[in-house]
Image (cartoon, rainbow, N blue to C red; front, side, top):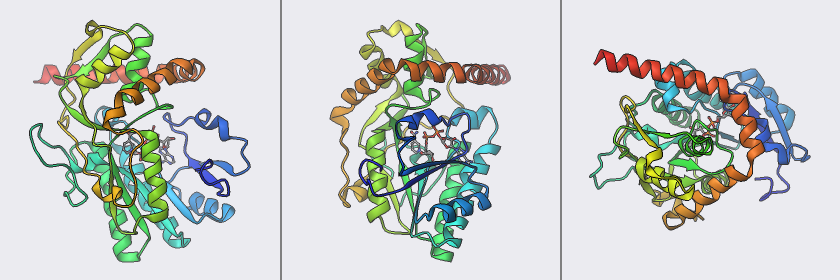
Length: 332
Ligand SMILES: NC(=O)c1ccc[n+]([C@@H]2O[C@H](COP(=O)([O-])OP(=O)(O)OC[C@H]3O[C@@H](n4cnc5c(N)ncnc54)[C@H](O)[C@@H]3O)[C@@H](O)[C@H]2O)c1
């Protein structure tokens, strides 16, 4: 946004949870048009103060607890607090401070699961039917957005985007997680048969879609965002292995995630009608993936710093996950 609109002042309001990292924005930290404020979106006073102090007119909410496995094995409370209550607090801040436009970034996971052989895709009128606690908490936020639009005329747009890939992604997400593991000479864990399908989009295409919707999206509407790029987890894994010149022997099949949604697939016709099209369509996925992997390999300082900082916490989570999986296996 700073590059595209040099006149805009951007305020980044972030709690800096384990997933937050100020170093991701080190290159703009000294830009006079950029301000960082540490805060929690469930704190209405802090939101209101920030809006007043900086004269904010438009809001995009990215803040969320996002790691599906944590929402299953680590408890869902933080997910409900940020993804549902937090959204409601942002809606109140938007309503009380007469914000002109608010884009709430949600996810395709709120639609639930499609069958592998089903012809249909998720459209904006597909009923929400979340299966994961993460997705249910995001759906709670979406429903609040609809209620605030209908009841209070809050100018809110909700987006449902597919899986993102690209640089700077926290290494609990599958692509950087696999890349980091392979860089360390470790095997990569693939859930179940590996045939679960996700629709993958480059993060810059997602960002450009949000920019478009902030300026041209219609309040009260939902917009799907996706690049028509369905891939099975196994296909992604094999692509990563091939780009990193590793063999299939580096795959370790592990117990499937409980309630693992089989397939997500997005119909993004509505946003393309507004003029959006991905720079990384399906044909360029392998190229985008190779660029992403090259970025992680080149930015070793970023990788190492993050790996060190998060190492203990990731380890604890992996151990909790294993314990929880073992418990489930012995119970069945
Ligand atoms: N990553 C994806 O593939 C994907 C796909 C579709 C939609 N989304 C949505 O995009 C958004 C961003 O996803 P991400 O992958 O960058 O997430 P992430 O987990 O990597 O980062 C979340 C950010 O939100 C901040 N945060 C968390 N709770 C907060 C709170 N209570 N108050 C203020 N800040 C808080 C964290 O500090 C962190 O900077 C989320 O809303 C997510 O649901 C992500």
